Amino acid sequence: MVFSQEMFIFVAKNYAETTKKVMKKQKIIIERELKSNSENIIWALISTEGGLAKWVADDVTETEKQITFRWGEEWSHHEIHVANIIKKVKNDHLRLRWEDETDDDAYLEFRMEKNDLTNDYMLYVTDFALPEDLDSLRAMWDQNFEQLRQSSGL
Image (cartoon, rainbow, N blue to C red; front, top):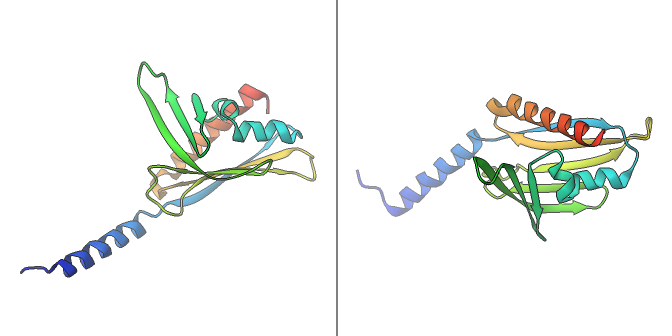
């Protein structure tokens, strides 16, 4: 059986769509109350190179439209991932999309909101993972929040 070019393109597009639907990532939102009522401190922790390097990665560099995260030491095993800045609203949220992300709906977001009852800030991290990776992703963010608490006292 010989396929025409149109038939091949049709099959390839259907396969790509089916694979995309099967590999759909799920959204998780992790929230933590931070022991701070300082808007500037929280914003610096979620939106600056120095702030993110305290709790998300070993080294963080930012250009106008991208943030590069490095884990590990440069002279030994390390990973580097680049995220494009989708939206940055001062004292509210930072939304990123990994350059190598294949799920069109996936992003990473850091959002801060003031808790009216305690007057402290809540930090919400929104991230995406495949269903089989959700527990690992939650554990990773738990570790990151523990690092944040240890490095900043929040």
